[in-house]
Length: 213
Image (cartoon, rainbow, N blue to C red):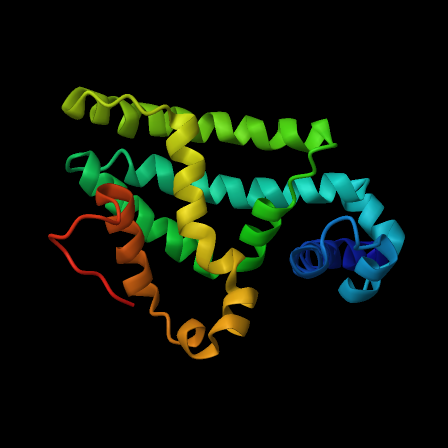
């Protein structure tokens, strides 16, 4: 009995190791190229332990996606519903979202890059989160924007565009480091964040403000 209790105590640690190992491997090798045996060896567990916690590699991917999306949605719900006009709320959201991306880089890469177009189950899973996010963007950004300017931009346009802007630094980092190692290493996160805010809210042709990295 005592031995069984000790084994159960170790289970949460084993589950966390599996998740962290999967996030790292999926981000660098890709979901399809990562085998369960390699994952088990990296996490220091056996295959039975992975099946015990997740049942399959696909269910493990879903849990990784859920972890990332839930944090991202919490930020959107809090910051886009905060005080100030919609521009102030958007700026606060972008600052917090990029900081979140920076602290969860591998989760971001897995979430962004693992979009298998031939797997309806994963697409539906992501879509369920996207609907929640786009609902917030529609209410807090698109409607105020339309009321103020008359421009009706759908959340299905603003949402993906904003994610692409905020995540671009992390998606293209390996390539940019090869193209310009000095420039890639010298990017300041705060300056990058303010550049994204300005670009999103004002575009790149606004000559009233100069933003440099």
